[in-house]
Amino acid sequence: MKTRNVRGPTDLAPKICGGIITILVGKAEKRKEFYVHEDLLRSCSPYFDAALGKDWKEAGTRTISLYCDDPEAFQIYTQWLYSGKVWSASRTHDARPLSELLRMADERNLLAKAYCLGDKFLDHLFKDCIIDAILECFKVKDENKKVYLFGKRQVDFIWANTTCNAPIRRLILEQYAYRGRVSWDYDIHCKEFLVDLLREMYQTRIHPGRKALDSDGNTCKYHHHAKDQPCNKRIEEQAD
Image 1 (tube, one colour):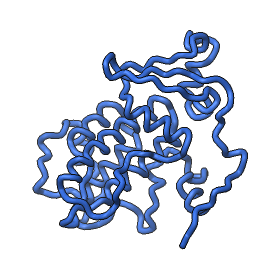
Image 2: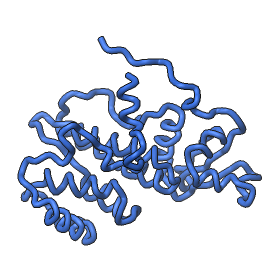
Image 3: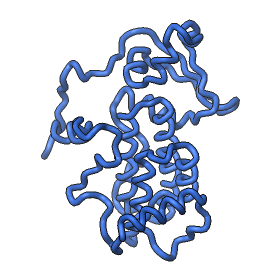
Image 4: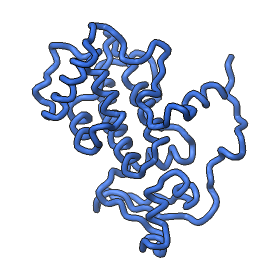
């Protein structure tokens, strides 16, 4: 049985020294407090690095307020900071009944929010990990061997909170172009998404059943790392 390596290089270890930063996330009754090591937070996010710089008041109060953000999505981020994993999946991975797949829409909502949060924090490595988590979601099949992509709620949220060149948009457009069906209700989507999808379909001249991913399962075209930089996912796979 294949075992996972438990050792890792010291220069890649998470930075969990230094002081603790309090982060208040969410509105009023849903607000939650998170406590994160400053060095870890600043090393991963230019947003927090700037917020904790000497020119911002947060550097003195040691508290950052994110009242407009989602606490559950931020929890995904903090868990990832310390573990390198996206903790969003349910416990089982086999074929699931339709009712459970519908409940998985909550996970898709969470991943969409987490990606946009990573975009706000300028944490590209986190966004790449969220992309890989989304692709894993797209592989889950129901008892009829059907898969489910992002729906209106997730698509509208992403189009409202990302720029036109965001890699996650490319992922969604290619999945719709290659795996979409005539029977789907496209009228419910926002106009900008439909225009982008039309352009994507003209560019690809798609064939029914063709896979959006490369034949080797390469997901790097949806990642933020440069072409000449190693992919964190592949580094982990080679280390296992």
